[in-house]
Image 1 (spheres, helix red, strand yellow):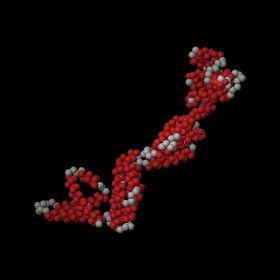
Image 2 (tube, one colour):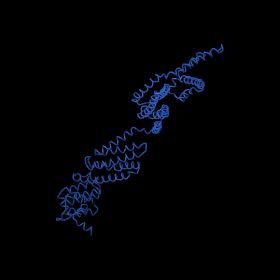
Image 3 (tube, rainbow, N blue to C red):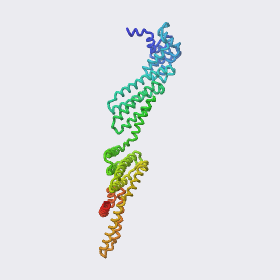
Image 4 (cartoon, rainbow, N blue to C red):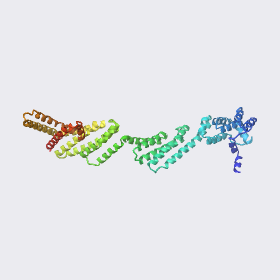
Length: 482
């Protein structure tokens, strides 16, 4: 009874009639005969001969049966856009005394059609401005609802961990891309509804990125968070939302710039660990030497992978030298307040460490200013205290001893032995002056042995006398020093 009662209401009778056939003229009777015979094309040909309210309505129904929405819209705009046809249609359904809101017929028809077929499918065929505006409203609502629902789902991930927030942000971005793109096509950037939903979506994606970065220990966390935050920045419209996105993107960009390239992450971690331990130790030169020696292999690996001019490589190498230089300055300054012997000792170790630092690559600004100025001061002190003299004194003494030994050997040799032992002694003595240079160069014993081993079996003939000779030099230097 309720359904029957509803059908007696004029507006409901009209609504259902808008989607069914109407027989009001003789042409309609002829067309229906073809329709009953299954000849829908012939029926349509007859209705196309003359535009009337009933022929337009019947053509709409035929087009709906074929899902030909272009023809549906074309006929409907003609039917409902002409008051004469609209009134004829109402009279055909309700009678001449029927009372109905003719002006609302078009939009009621369009509402049902949009719900059934989708406003997006109909909009390309609509020419009437009022119809287009109405259909856009119908199209916008499900898009906005879709975005709102996706935002609500993302919000539920809050407090469930960094990974959950990352997944929620990425899902929110992907699940709303299509709807948001369509929304952009319907609404302008100045539209208040568009601004509100764009800012709401963008700020939630931004927050997902922030929460993930703050709670994650992943090496790539900053890059993953930036991916979300830049997308959020690209879709927000309101000034407050733009400012918030810009602020967070700028902060994250600075963090990313300070990160090591992914290919040298292991080396970076090793260097950072050495620096962490170094910072807990006293400001002494011996620890600076340890830092330099332990980090040099890692720096060399980074240099090999990234190149000597890489910005990150130069920055981390400079950081190592800067930390080592600090200990040199502190210990030398402290030693100058003590006895001269302590000052000389500190200067000697500081200069040896400086020669090691000279082999490190540095940022040009640091090298030309802070490092160069401190190196110059240290060199002046080193020379002023005559710290540098004793290696050459030791070398000179060793040369004289070598010459004396050569001459003694010459005098003791058999008169048949023509070997110039005195000249040999002098030549061996001259080698002594290579030792101070060797010590200043910072060349390691492993590198030296590697070089000498290239001579094959002959290397043993060279190494053993050199070893003895060098330690004679070291012993003399120690005696002169103390």
